[in-house]
Length: 550
Image (tube, rainbow, N blue to C red; front, side, top):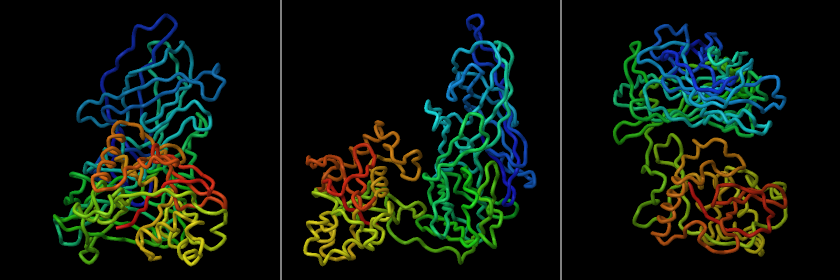
């Protein structure tokens, strides 16, 4: 599915593409049928949206959407005899679109189907198949994930097809010959960025767009579900929220071109709706744009007060609507990004005398900012003593994202204690050995989610692209690609005299301690074999790795 243009700061319409001639499914036993042929339409309403026709001359028409070749949808068939909420018959469909044709209706053919008794069903269409998880347990029966880190490879928004969630529902008859008709409505939203290069530098390429709140609040959802099969709105999983949207542009998507007399580049993101109170009037919405020009890199930051400039966000990002931001870049906005550019897996600071390996690169920094893991590790007998460190005034100790603050705060509080090394061996080792007795030293014990970032980079993945990774093992952790990436990372560690992960052979095995306290008696540990964290007693032993920012 593809996408088109958006109206200024509001919701718009769409139109979808056209397909091949009807085909019939044959060879079913008498009284049984395969899945009927599907004629799918996207409803044309001002509040619905999906992927777009580019270069729509009349923005008042908003976004128009059409089907694309290979679009895949899952249809669940239910009848009154199915009394359990998760009972259904399932069929998979694919669109075959004629070249150059754009329409909002299309014929889909079934590629796989369970056998259906002839009769009347309620059909539930879920688009796209790849974005929905149809599970057996009722709690998460119809669950979906949309990454808040997306990549755009083309100058238009065709990449959004994987994320533009839709659902259809209608009573249909299955008799082996009658096609069924479903009308799909949109459950996700579209954010479009139109970046206007007015700097006079016509060699700029747009590399990244990051959207976040100045307050740092995590308001953008990565996970949602339908509460039941008849639901028409998504229920957000707020525990999976993140603080930023990130769009990375590659290839031709980075290029500017003259449109409407302006040197413009456009970026597109599909996003889940937010809570209605996600954006407070007192907060600011910030856009960080990174550009390249040969070997030169630039950062532009645009800040807009929500209460005065972005009143249309008063209800949050609403389901099925489109949002259009025009961002004008002047020559005075360009701030040079200084520093060596690194990629995950590079030695830091150089290949000759490295002290660590890069495991994460900050989105939008073009490789000049990120995190490094030290070459070595050590074993400690425990995290610490049973004590409420947060209540004791240790700043950041319960943060799952900021190990630097927690480490420095613990060192500042206990460095003068005669029992520091015995009470808090992990923090003492960082202070005494890694930072040479400097309480403001650069190395620190990673927080829980920094260990997740480490495991993602160690496994060859981009941390921000991973969805559905809350308290479970990292998705695809056991894939061949991830295994190969971890083996290569370990080889790089060993090649410079370091220690491979999990190679110490002590009783802690693959478990590594984080800086993050849970309660007075527990802290977070992390399993670097499968990417899952746990809440362990503070007297549990573990290995530690030290990290630093660059």
